[in-house]
Image (tube, rainbow, N blue to C red; front, side, top):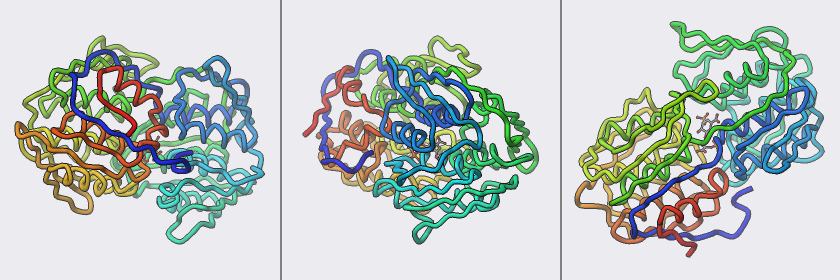
Length: 447
Ligand SMILES: O=C(O)C1=C[C@@H](OP(=O)(O)O)[C@@H](O)[C@H](O)C1
Ligand SMILES: C=C(OP(=O)(O)O)C(=O)O
């Protein structure tokens, strides 16, 4: 759990070019889902490559609290599930730490079982909206009692006789979509979720992989996902692919630090996740996909990022937002080194992540000498191109791992060092970030 310990100030400054291979950890989204679906299956699920970050470890603990057995043996995670509808009532509050994905998916998973559970998290998670999940869950017959504005701590009373649901997502959110589908598992009949914009599709793919019947159709009203309730999920062996959202940091560092040449192997390029890499290439980044192949039905490549001295600002198509939603903070750093403005629209969701990510990055970039304009659902970073970025300030990480990492990468390419007041949130998603960056040659220290 983040945010409970002593803050860890960290400093990054320009120095050597970054060179070498960056082996990033497993995908956070797939790691959460592997544990949850394993807990809902009959038999033994074995997971390798699981992200051992705090967010996922909190989900492992939660699955134990609901009655599953979750153990780590020689680097493999072994889950003995309780079957769909088999969740036991936890004897204590479930603490999901910093993780929106964890809390929202688990609320959905227990929402149609006859158990009651109370959820909480760190100060960041307690500030995030849960009504987006509890509103659709109420259609199943689930009740939720939280703080004002639908905030944690929150008690969820699972529906005793759940009915299936048809729901059109009002926000582009894979967490909301997944919460509904996971709740639909224990409702008789067909649960239908319709999304107007495609969001990451790991839940649909993995549910099918565990033996559920899931239909996905592109219709006039959007992407229609239909799940048949009350399947018996069968335990699986899962190899978690590496996380493109973590790969983003060494890739972007390679692009903006002069002289760099960084290889980030085995990164999934699932189109619902790879929007940043397309954007970087449109900006003129020297980013190539080497050794392109298919693994587990997904496109995979080794990403090679080299210093790119003539980046240009672009308008990022708003319809691409969902496929790179966690990457806007680090994109804003690359944009600061481009020639001209980078315009990012249709990104209201950034305001309700671990922090208000537009505000957090705008403040850090402005303090570092970069002009940023912003509105409710848009922002523009005016790149300084050849003039470079001054840096030389301390940014607040606001309990947000992606803000901390983005500001440190900024420090590796700015004229003066950048400091973050607290690097501890990085351990939620990328516990080896410091060592990995230092191994590439980054001057990154705790101080
Ligand atoms: O489903 C998931 O695994 C995630 C969905 C996204 O959140 P939203 O659903 O809120 O967009 C993303 O920001 C988060 O890091 C992981
Ligand atoms: C938004 C994120 O995570 P979560 O919503 O799971 O806290 C993220 O990892 O950038």
